[in-house]
Length: 285
Image (cartoon, rainbow, N blue to C red; front, side):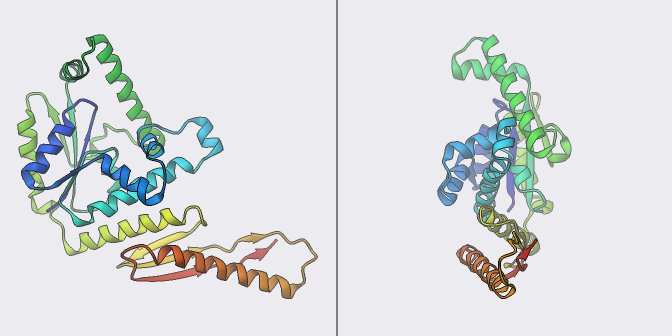
């Protein structure tokens, strides 16, 4: 069967729908579990990962740590791709449809609801006045819109990001569940040998790129489990005092050390069938 991602506005019944769809299809239903898996595997505090998927980076963060926010998102994406390789999953966490873009057997669903219904739900769950509930919903909606624009340069409400857009109102929660289950069973969203290979390669690619981030800048490609890593030659400072023979030995040693470090990291990743490592020779300038 397929993989289903459910994107939803806050208090729009998306979590409830995801859980019922998973139960009806016999699928696993996941959300926060992916962040926990990413935290354990990549040894990053859960709070940092959670913050990255809910908040756009501030101007100060972009200046001081320009790559940190994207690295955290890459870790979450790698964990999600690894998790859904076994198929039969409903994911209702943040940005699932973006993390799994391009995989044929992913059904991308967006669930929205009327503001009145959302306010009623918040008041009931949080025991707060309606004015406070409206302020809370509007603030969270703005936060999610800003995150999409800042991180992915996309509009969260753009229907082209989804395969189904379900408006809970006249369309009931039960209607939405039935529609999603029926669509997931369609031939268009059934996995094929090719789509499964694409998913496995995407998962491996994401994993390799993530573990190499702190080591070096590298171009990574994966095909059928074969990983190709290409690293450009590093620029070295020429002091004018090093003899040509010594320079050559330094270049060769640096090249080989980097190759060994990459091999040690990548070879431990499950699913790697072979590694092709192309390291450019360091050069003096």
